[in-house]
Length: 71
Image 1 (cartoon, rainbow, N blue to C red):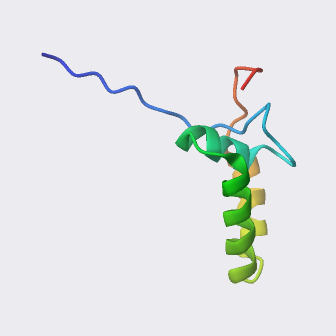
Image 2: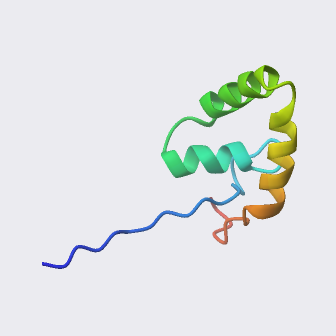
């Protein structure tokens, strides 16, 4: 039997976004609530003395927008 893995891709969310859709995309990828991701991201950004802001900007540039306009 051949086992085929369906690979998931991380995309910026078109539907669930506040700024660029990165946290919404992470939530869609892991199939969890985006509010939880946003809260975790805010805490980690504060704990890392703002490094999360730089990471967010880099992710905004590198992570592609979801080709499905409804996601």
